[in-house]
Length: 211
Length: 211
DNA sequence: CACGATAACTTGTCGGTGCCAAGATTCGGG
DNA sequence: CCCGAATCTTGGCACCGACAAGTTATCGTG
Image 1 (cartoon, chains in turn blue, brown, orange, yellow):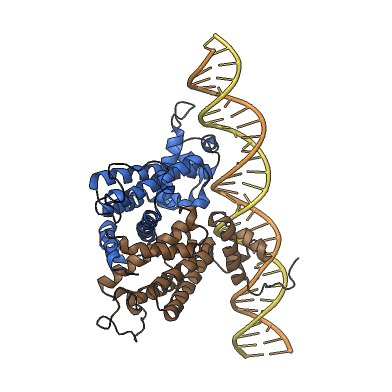
Image 2 (cartoon, protein in one colour):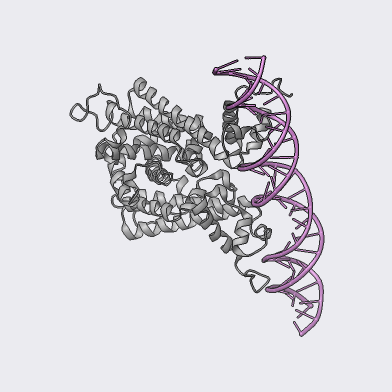
């Protein structure tokens, strides 16, 4: 069915959601601009007007992903008030938006120096660092270190202490590693049915990791 | 310069190393069978005789990677006798063999059901689990649990206790997350110059991660 | 040593893809 | 109302992965 009007209406968003769908069931390698155009019912060169090239589309997809992740983390931090739940939120995002999540951390796929992309990524990182100090079960919480009333500001990542930064990276590494390993199917079958429950179990084992 | 003999000699290995090189400086997305053939000085269809298709070549690359990783982990376990050093070995492999490492955990890129691939992957997993129980600074070490003289056997992964498995997955998640995040350039600049030193620092922070 | 089977490689072709250029259509601000 | 700009189309180019059929070297077996 050919569409009525010459203009699509919201081709840009249509392409992004189509891309996420296509990646989700065929992998990013098989992603094709021309196929997305077909799905949206436009000619093969139409996408080029909204995204300079394929990398441009993936840049937009990744940017959108970082923004949504940042928002989800911020919401989770306020709602659950738990560091573990913050990690679970991270994992949930990776599972629900698997396609986007995979693209976000494949810098060879998009324009890694894009300003919007960098801003969104920093936003997400800040939301993660904020959990290190603000949450009651956080390792570095306490009135001596920070004043809980003060929310993390933009650009904070560069200013936090080495301790906060390092613990933050440790937590990030752990939950990110779990997400990517699970997504790649590297984990044993027992974790396959309910990855979130498995994550709560496994992430909790960190106490016994007395390296 | 055309080569002397009609036969290449060791085209299979030549293609694999060329692939690793190509991926290392252009990313796996830009990898092209025809380009590999050109690099090896053979016709564009020659690679198909050693690997059925592109996924077949990447399967071989990943299998080789898992085998080398398993060997490196086993060697490290015997030499350094430290769980932290086992993690460092994992990271070193990811850094030195960046291209191969990235392929290994991108199951959409190769034939994930290949028997050789699965065997090699299990080998690597076993080497990792072995560190959980055998090493002196391991969280689950002790004569009550295991006899240190008995090396891990094949197929062990299915038989170990839930505790060992979970702590193992926690450790694996952490070091794997660190490696992938670092490779994707997501970490702050301060870790960029010496990732191994940064890893020692950050992985050590696990104690303060009292989730 | 010969010779036939087989493995290794080549040439040629096909549909598909990303990107570029040039033209057609529609929208929107003066 | 109209002209510039944004949106989309058509056409073409070089490249890619896969397939088919032919050529050359190697190797096991008599």
